[in-house]
Each structure stands twice: as C-alpha cells, then as structure tokens.
Length: 288
Image 1: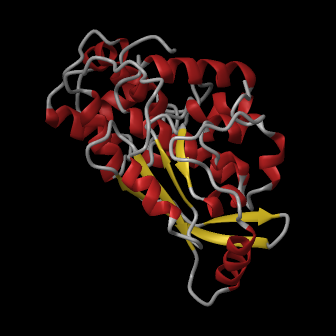
Image 2: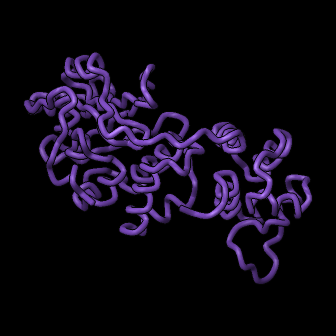
C-alpha cells in the first residue's frame, strides 16, 4: 500500500487530478507534476506551504474543519468527496479482521429469492458476493456467491464484453470499494485484494491511484447478455442494518422498456438456485 496516512494519500491523489488552468492558474513553463504543485494548492487554500507539506507527509493528521473545507474547495471536491475528506482526518478505527465465515442474513437471502425478475445480490464492504438470486446469476457469473466482484471485473476477460461500457463499470466498482472501506486502508482484506490486483492489472492500478469514491447511486449500466441481448439496468444500493457493512445491491429496468422485456426473458431462463450461504467453487470464485 502507498506510504503515508489515508489523508495524505488522498490529498496527493486529488492534487494530481486538478490542472492549473482549472483553477485559474497559468501552467507556465516546464512542470514536474501533471496537476497542481503543493505550493499552488496551499495558496488556493489559504494555508502556508510548510503546513500543507506536513499534511501530505502525514506529520499533521488532524487539521481543522476550516482547513479541510478550504482544501476541498481548492481541489474542487463535491459534497460527498468533501465529507469523505473530513472522515479521513478523523480518529482512525482499528482495522477489522476479516470474518472468513461472514454470511448474508438468512431473511435477506429468502427475500431476494422471491424476486423472480429483479437481479439482487448481497455483498460485503470488499465486494465479496455473499448471496445472489437466480436471475442475478443468470445476468452474469460475476454475481455468484464466493466471487469478488472487483477481481472478476479485472481478471475475467469475458466480462469486458459483458458491459456496454466496461471502463465505467470498473471505475465505479473501484470507487465503491474505496468508499465502503473508508479510512481503514490497513484493512487486511483490502490490502490483500488491492495488492493482488495492482500486481496483475494496469487498469486497476490506474483507477485505484485516483482515489475516486462513489457515495451516491450509480448510473444505469448496459449489460450485453449472450441470450437476451442488451439490458439497461439501474443499480440501487441499500445498507443492511445489523451487519458489518453489508449491502443489498439490486438492478431494475424501466417498466415496459425493451430492457424490462429482456429481463423477463432472462428470469424465465434463470432456473439455477444457490442454497442459503452457498459458495461457488467455479473458475470465477477461484480466480487469482
């Protein structure tokens, strides 16, 4: 994992994404960095360059709310990104060890099992799939219990053609992973997953280095299904109370649309069921 605190890593990554011309500064002559220089960001935020250097080096870990708001404005962060920045500067919780036997609540598994035409999965904060209904599995094998959805997106070549815009889907998944884990960047499971994918995928390294987050609902995704054709589905994410960050993630289509009709056809072919708490031992589950 990169050196520094979660706050310093985030500041460095976001500073690299802001061009001088975006904030009314002249690019000038030769530049060693693609984004803002440290002293430029300090000037825009109204703080001393030495103080900002301490923040980026992790020597000052708890700046005031006023300083964080000023940095957020200078970095052109939106409301969700600003809240995330404030969270990174708070007292860090102890990293949680991974529960190898984490299960989706049985009542949620029964509920999504009754949804015959709405693809639905339960995943943990690392995007490990814990439960899925039959139509979700029919939509894509990446939704089988036991699969990590982020790993599948980057390591299974056939999934690149399964999305109308793979780049957008992958970038969204990476941002969601970072958002769900938050400032627990020393989380053992996250370190294991990020290290593996950084070693094996240049695309993942590029997207992970941006420190993007996704705190709001994703845009509709288009799935290119080999049997029923393209489906445009709107994702929805619901937190499951009483769990360690589990999410109920479902996809629905506009009623009466061609995607809705294709989804109904897909549901008619979805005859496979996964037992409560079942784990898939197929190629996707064992990728990596």
